[in-house]
Picture 1 (cartoon, rainbow, N blue to C red):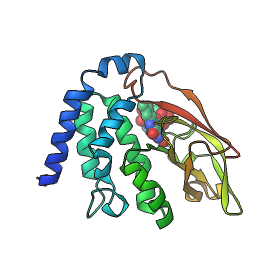
Picture 2: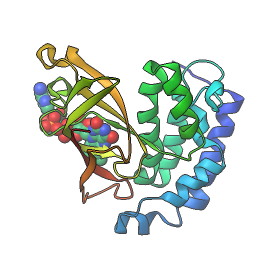
Picture 3: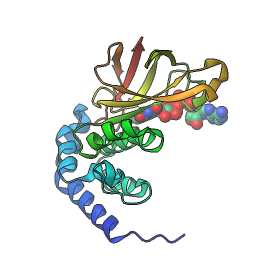
Picture 4: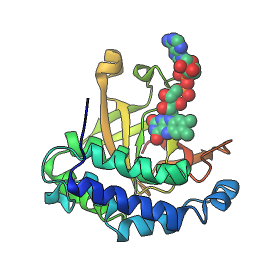
Length: 219
Ligand SMILES: Cc1cc2nc3c(=O)[nH]c(=O)nc-3n(C[C@H](O)[C@H](O)[C@H](O)COP(=O)(O)OP(=O)(O)OC[C@H]3O[C@@H](n4cnc5c(N)ncnc54)[C@H](O)[C@@H]3O)c2cc1C
């Protein structure tokens, strides 16, 4: 299938290419070797409005129609050409934002999406557990209703942007008897009581990306 980018997408691509060339290339080796999280690059992406490319205009983004996934992929691809690890700080935030975008209520969208669009806060998506990788339906983390809130218990592993992000979309079971069909997505903010960070993976590659365990203990 032949697909042509729009004028706007070509501009996004060019901007991401420039950041990759001018800002990422000079630091990529150091950040990878020393496993440094690229906050300065995140700031650069925020200042150049690149976190807005996958968020609708009504939530301070720049997507007028549809989902902006192609825009997100364009940026991720260009940044990855310089450093896959640094690109993941951007892509991981998109991954954490999309469940809110697709299934969040209006209050949640208004609260979280503008913060992600401005790049002021990063998001993360948490599905994987020690016994639930490829077999995502084997998730064991539970969410039990308690008045207006849900209380989460369990742990997630290998979470991109773990510890660095402020906004976490977490998959947990509200009805364990139903298995995967009893799963829902929850938004957890960093700093929520009972929500802690565990082991940060000391990876063999893409080391500028933070890959970390999340622990929910009556969170
Ligand atoms: C750098 C990094 C970042 C990540 N970021 C995130 C994140 O942000 N959020 C998140 O939720 N998760 C994240 N993950 C987790 C990732 O999604 C899982 O690693 C992935 O789902 C695979 O699960 P697993 O590692 O448990 O491998 P397993 O599921 O144990 O698979 C191991 C191997 O067995 C094969 N295999 C598994 N089942 C079968 C089968 N039935 N038949 C044949 N072959 C099979 C697989 O293809 C694979 O080669 C990340 C992982 C990495 C490495």
